Length: 601
Image (cartoon, rainbow, N blue to C red; front, side, top):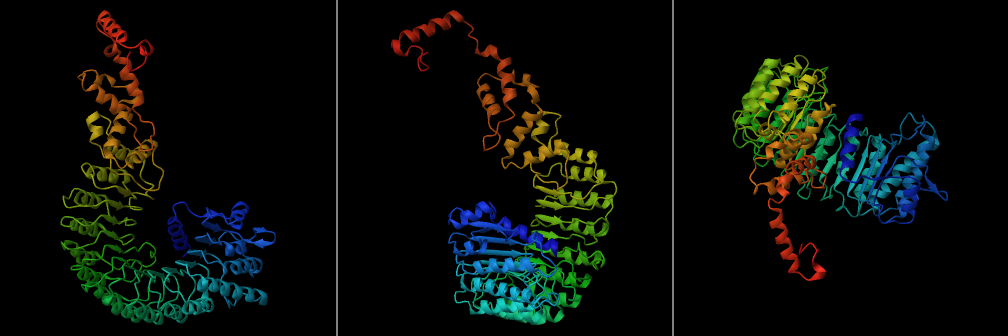
């Protein structure tokens, strides 16, 4: 749950390229003075005050703030939450007066009401006061587009307070995103919350992942998205209490829905293989609009995955399929080679829209690798394949896989993820991978993170692939496309090549490599000597060109200097007397005041 919270927070903050400004004494003064430049702030403590008034007071009066992030991870929450709850309550009291904030994110703060572990009566009142003020902000702010309260243990009572004000909100057109991830929301409270969202016609993203949503919540979801006025596109019900009854309700709803694009049903272990077989039928409907489906870490057997493959045989909309089983090592994947054989038959469909398949931790062995590889012989739509954490395959099987996938003329693969796979003979397996990449110019990402067995010898194969320094031609024909090999620390020479390949202009990348490694320190400069004189200006221009669009200095300046120094004879007149006579003739023909100016000399 903590990992998912961190991931969601990173995704949320990444939406703002500059990121929110951290609240401190200086930014609080700017907020107080209504500085229009401060539009996005992050709060990780509540003790900043001016003249006895806290940050919430000034945020409430500020008309320029658009984004507010409250992060409680670093705050000191004592056993009864006394002091921090009091400061959070004061903060929300001020926040309730704000009408400009469009994106509100509150993470890892204590917002529960009625928690049995809290016995202090004053703290209970503070917690109720806090959630009421927060709900008041949501009800009265007509500009609110995104509401995110994650990992705050809202519980049932706080959720019901929030549902009540959302139902009464007069302006329901602004809210587009609601994320209540990991808040211990029970099935009945979830039902009330979902029902309160009727009429929010612009709501596109609803996340109730990591809660306790069950059958009643599924019924409410079904009624919500079945409404002709709703336009929900993303639904996250990950890690809840959905069983076969609940998935049957969702199946009937999704079968006729034409707006839903992304669905996350991962970690719902109460759904049996029979329930999944039924659910996959909704993908057979020609009107199915689902483009991304996350069903990892569930009880999916051979029979169920075969039903999925059969449903996708004629599906033309699903682009991303997430089968990530990486987090259920205590519960081995129930899919065998026979199941994968039945599933991957769908990739032979020429109308298939599948682009990304995530098979992380799916216990795919040698036979399974051969089945996956065979699917690439006819498929031309897959652009990303994640086979991480499948170390069951031996070196020979991986060699066949690399050859089939990367040498297939139909392959469109741009990303290949192989984390935690190479335990033995890692350097040999890397060598096999590099040999298969010798003529591939499509693959940009190869993630080899968490493969500590790869040594400098293994990485040297990639160094030669990205820059074969044996000749100027071999450098030019090297791989200039691969720009990511994982999060691990790479050898310095390989790291430089990876960064060079990040440049979009591949001709510029090839030129920079030639300058850096073939004409390094002015070596091999004699190759310019036999050029025809009319070609020389182009060679000089080629050497002096900037590599980066930012104007970063090119590696060609040193070779350029060496070239001009060794070719100085080109700039010495062969007939000094004749040249002097011509120069004097030109100068005599000019007015005295301009004789030595550049235009006449």
